[in-house]
Amino acid sequence: MTRQQLVEQIYKKRSYLCVGLDTDVTKIPKHLLSEPDPVFTFNKAIIEATKDLCVAYKINTAFYEALGVKGWEAMEKTVRYIGDEHFKIADAKRGDIGNTSDQYAKAFFETLPFDAITVAPYMGEDSVKPFLQYDGKWAIVLGLTSNKGANDFEFKKMAREDTRHGVDEFLYEKVLKTASNWGTFENLMFVVGATQDDEFADIRKLTPHHFYLVPGVGAQGGSLKEISKKAMIRDCGLLVNASRAIIYASEKEDFAEEARAIAEQYQQEMKEYLPEKNIFQLGCVYETFNTSRGLIAVMDFPEKVILKIGAILMSKSGHKWKLIGIDRPRPIELTNFKFTPRYSGLLFGCVLEPVGHSEIPEPNEILQIIA
Image (cartoon, rainbow, N blue to C red):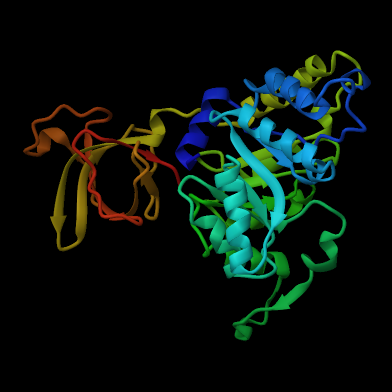
């Protein structure tokens, strides 16, 4: 699943909820234990009850691996049952030398149809790169976790490489800055725990365009409101995970209904925090010119849009351009252009720099401002 597809689901459902299928066979309702595959039966019911309220499912592989072959079978049936409309995360926290990571990537992206996998960055770039070689697939790198043990290493101070400034940084900050260069914000996310909400504003400054997978809301006590306030960006940039609070909402036969009720509470709250996706995030290209300054696109935008140097504009096909220059806007009636503007009637000369491609926007193509 591409970033654009994920964002479309978020705004379609007005939700950035990820439901964690951390299914412990000892905690599911007792009446399911007589089923041939109780774990899959449970997961299937949870999925059916919540699929219109969430955009992602996170399968913690440990709960399935612990059951041996039957657990792997239940996991495969579950991830295939979820389908393509939802973002499917393997919470496996893999990471090893290159050829081993190659096989992990093949296991989760080829043998199994996951969209993303959580990875540990401790062994460095070559342990993560294999997960970044697949189109439409993501590596979700552990950044700042929600557990108490985060204090053992992640909050340790490190001397900056540029010691002239004499300012130390936390290890997790070094991880975020370094790992963000291994991929792009199209194929690399970070895990940032909800219980670390005091750090979210600073983390967003370090990685302004990346998506975050945020565990720790619900049973662990993280604040959805604070996370959304401090870390949400123009196209949301958040997947907030809730596991136990949803899937174990009831131990009785009404477990799916109760799970839905809790998921709906999250979705309704998220709906309030998520900005409206409207025409104020769009612009229309009318003509393009290759000049000594680079590619200039004649565009107009809705009146309330605020253009900034460095903004990223994306086409429906997923191509991106960085805005590196803006000419003073002119009313169309003071120009020689004869077309009818889509939005404001003020024409901008936008100097666009392709990001990772050599494509040129088509006439009348709509570009979305994503960052």
